[in-house]
Image 1 (tube, rainbow, N blue to C red):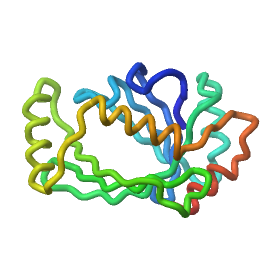
Image 2: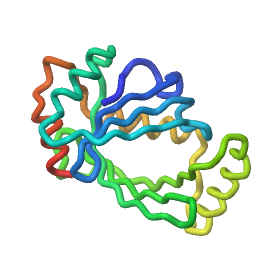
Image 3: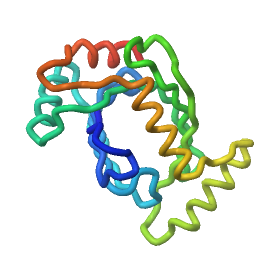
Image 4: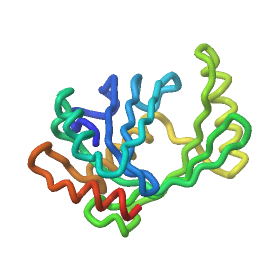
Length: 168
């Protein structure tokens, strides 16, 4: 669940209710999309509490948004987290629409250049080429547009979220 207004790259914050590995969670991200200094908090949503989470988002002004599901395998290599994502089709979460690999590191502010170098080196060690910020934004917008769904509070059937939570 994410506010689908304007380009992803123009948003200063991103609030989403998402299904990841069969669990529903509220993700709150602040900062430039794809930026090196983005802050993030993940809050688990208990089984049976999807409506209350959506009501809370609606009360904060997030009444319409995109929703999607991912199956994610996470690995750690020192302080670097490597995540392999399967992007599931929101209309049918049993189908995989796309894949991508994400490398992240939690580090003190002021070390961004050094950390980006470390991540790039790690990716290249796996034979991967990092996307540019523009490529990543385009890909994320494609995910939202082509494979995720649209949610409107009070109109969309909650089984959409329950199905994503149960099947991914």
